[in-house]
Amino acid sequence: MEHTEDGRHIVVGGRRWRATDPSIPEKLRSELVRALMTGRRLVKTEGDAARVMVHDAKVALGERGDPWWEPTREGTRGRLAATIRTLLRSRGQGSICPSDAARVAGGDHWRDLMPVAREVAFDLREEGVVAVTQRGERVTGREVTGPIRLIADDGLEFTPPTR
Image 1 (cartoon, rainbow, N blue to C red):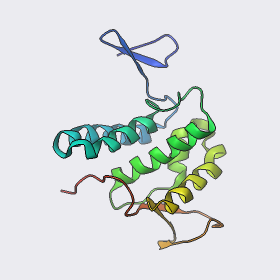
Image 2 (spheres, helix red, strand yellow; image 1 turned 30 degrees about the horizontal axis):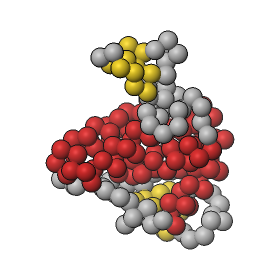
Image 3 (cartoon, rainbow, N blue to C red; image 1 turned 120 degrees about the vertical axis):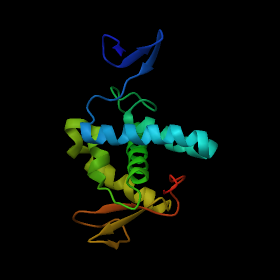
């Protein structure tokens, strides 16, 4: 695969496409790419309902939305939300930590994004997309101290069928 000189795009068949953010840790990048490929397959069997899965994965990878090399406040919040939704779909009944999303969107500076990642998680909870848990129990309010985990809630749009 050919990249542009600045590494921000790949060239396929003479067309430029935005490259995946190279600062995403490999383990998380692989999980996001698997989710993207699953979403693409599901579009063929589940129709347009699965497109949200593809879109969220591409935003999480930095291939859509604000350019990863020029992050904005709103673009970063959108990318964090897309990453949370993608990872929750990918993990099925499992949970994620907001730091997973911060590592995707923040690269080496992920710790700086932790307050925003938690804020986005609480916003998604208010929308019914996620539940925030601590020690396996759902928590309410925003003034939660200590580690939290996120699980999918009823408002998560399109979850892959289980086999």
